[in-house]
Image (cartoon, rainbow over all chains, first blue to last red):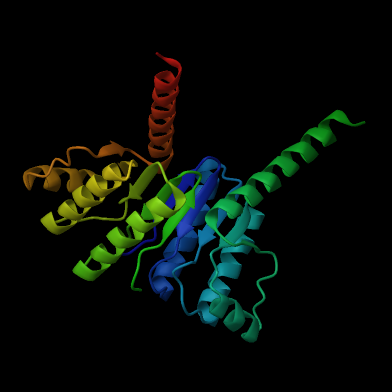
Length: 131
Length: 131
């Protein structure tokens, strides 16, 4: 298995991380994800990490990078399904993941993304109609 | 990694198969999936196999089993993202997966499930209003 599949759902992209990440896999994921955000003009990225039981600074950095890359491509990242132990480790590692929104499960994550996208569109329409 | 995560999206369950399946993992997936169909009263199961590059009779049988189990629990299974080589192998193995609907990608798979669920509800309402 040399790449993590990225699923397109509406105008969002969904990634489920199930395998242990190593350097090459993480790089491929970043490349694939940024390419697909651009290709589909995706507005949201949802990353489910419910099957990650342990996390290290490499994965933390990768998640932060993905969020930063998505943001400059105008897509919001939501991280879902984080296990309590992973949350503890991330904070202890000094990686509180600023700029990444989190949600308990995929369903709530999708709601969060929809709200964000609706707000953005409303703001854009507001800008257009105002003086 | 000892289990494949199952994501709940609306009244459907979404599974992305990314790793090579072995016996225990397949059994765990079947148990988890049937438990979650019952728990959430899910009406649809969507299995994405876009990252499977090869398939053998074990995986074919597992997919057929999952579809059969879901059906008796009143949920429809849709398989998405099958690669051409996998389709060729499955048919050559004599496993044309009867009873499993397929779709090119997750988005179309979701549409298919929604149509199926709407039809079912319409049929039930029809039954209710008739003599």
